[in-house]
Image (tube, rainbow, N blue to C red; front, side, top):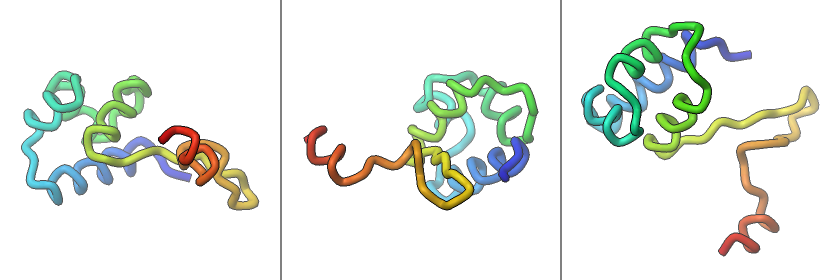
Length: 85
């Protein structure tokens, strides 16, 4: 299971991979620079809604999987995708 520090590190790595500065990603996400800095450092009390905003700005999504490996949230299956288009 991921912890907040690991999620923060993943976000930092993705931001750098995209060549974005922290202030640029914060602006694109609609969050404050301080929030993004704290998120990347793994602050355990970050607001989940803002984390999702940052992930969306990076083009990423959060998936929730059951122990049997079935994704129950975060990945649109083909039938839902077809209806959305």
